[in-house]
Image (cartoon, rainbow, N blue to C red):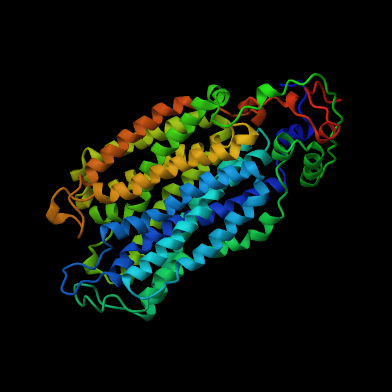
Length: 539
């Protein structure tokens, strides 16, 4: 690496925290607010969908979504997210972060609105429409992962870069919280005007026709926060690191960052000597790339995959766990709107007491104790609390012990977020070269979404009661919640082990972390004169 950094990148590395940092956090963070809201709000209304569209006359319990439909509704957005992460991650390196950043948000707004629409009134038509638009919603959400992380990492200074990237991701917590709070608000408003008896009193009358509007309003609301930040995204300049290191246009990078930093940054003339650039122009997944970054990519993909198996299975199906321990009454003792309220309240309390604080603990400490330590600590405590819940599971299901179960269950969320759920997002945006950064983050996060699908689809079946007569309608017997928690604890142990493949990045510049040699960059002036070679100094 050159003794002297390109001035514009050096200015970014040492810049004091300024207004533009917080503006970037808000612009990128609102995307993640919407991401979390859209991904998790569906778990609040799946039981309502079952009551509305799959009611069976004479059944002892309310209608539920068939296993294949429930799996599709809960998991189809993750399939879209996976493909979106790979596609937009690659596109962000190919065309630039800014050029495709607004497209992901526009797709999220459009598909959030369309998710509440139906081509027909029957169960098949409604579920098909919902799944179709949730796939494309997930596709847009997927693009937000690599682009937001990369943009924030390339805008930040090296002293507080971890906190800034983590703050963007922490907006997920507020999205989950908003989803629960808004569902409570909507269900309460409709319940006050269209009250109904419990299912056990009047099975058909317990779900009022107006309940069909409730789930639609909840899933469509996610479009509003995304739309509010679309204009601001369109005005963000391209990151200086992409412009300088990938496009080789140092003058434009300096001009863009001069406006952002409110200071004068000049692209100094360069001294060019013998060309030896070839050694640093290796391709993605080439032999040279694998020797330099292969283990890093294995570390980011494996830890994100293992984390998301555990994290998303808990988040999407916490309503079932709450029912098992009695925190949510039996479905037949409530009407449809009351059940939505109870499920939303449980999710809101968990988000407020553990999910949101966990994210912001990471923001506060990531640049003090480091990414590596936080990730190890998170996997360790997630394992500990899951085993503590699972081994004496029958003890926790007793009425007098249920509050203790909820506390320990909440702590697993706290240490997921004050741990690997945040650090996997941060580190993948720091350790790869600029020309591969968005792509590699997309690959890493796509691996995570593959884990989320394993959790979302697998837990539907695994968590079913071992007694076939006690399993949900249409489901085969599973291994039960207790054994599922034991399995998730074992998965967290693997996450702990694979963390040792990921390097610590605290306090280092992105170029130092990724091994990019700034002395091999040629500015626009040099290229225009057809002279290429090694830059020896920046006067």
